[in-house]
Amino acid sequence: DQQVKQNSPSLSVQEGRISILNCDYTNSMFDYFLWYKKYPAEGPTFLISISSIKDKNEDGRFTVFLNKSAKHLSLHIVPSQPGDSAVYFCAATSLNDNNDMRFGAGTRLTVKP
Amino acid sequence: EAEVAQSPRYKITEKSQAVAFWCDPISGHATLYWYRQILGQGPELLVQFQDESVVDDSQLPKDRFSAERLKGVDSTLKIQPAELGDSAMYLCASSLFPRQGSGYTFGSGTRLTVV
Image (cartoon, rainbow over all chains, first blue to last red; front, side, top):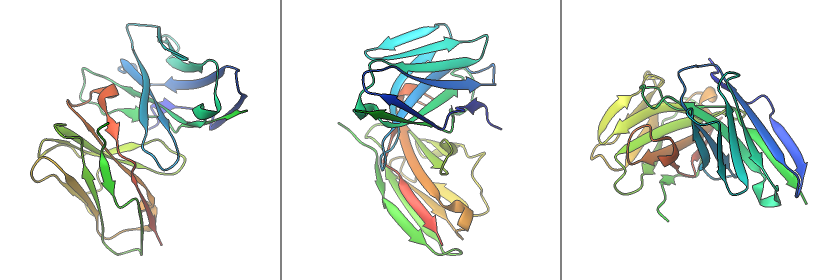
């Protein structure tokens, strides 16, 4: 069962523009959401997270927005840089439950110079 | 910066053969996870250890997969016999505490190809 969905397998943007990566989830028990970034031949690295008590979390060029009523979150990268080109995974978990972290299928972002 | 070490990086094996992967977590991390990532999908948890004990192996195909962490430090994941559908990236991760979300550190993974 796909509880976390990233419906766009790929996204291409121009350097300097905004990248918006989207993620939807179905399990209303999820209360903590994360984005991981993965370069080829490397493991995923944690990028940014958000708790369900917030609707926005910002870290430098990266901002994650959470819309609980729509069960939707998005990652904004502004401005996008060529080094941001990677696969981005959305993940969700319930910190109070014994559920493991569920990952989406990933979105491959390409930032063109 | 501390890393999760995994070996081998790549493994090609024939179906019905046995294969094993090794993981050395970050020193002091009590929780260790094995994930499987099939191409085009996100990582899926296979097994979670707390020290030397398995706390979650509900998604581990136990007829062919086994995992151990005998001294609560490094861990081995074994597949016997390997099947074509086992071709995937096998990722190890560790954290200080279980289900810490942002505290997971992943290794670079082992890319398994079963032919």
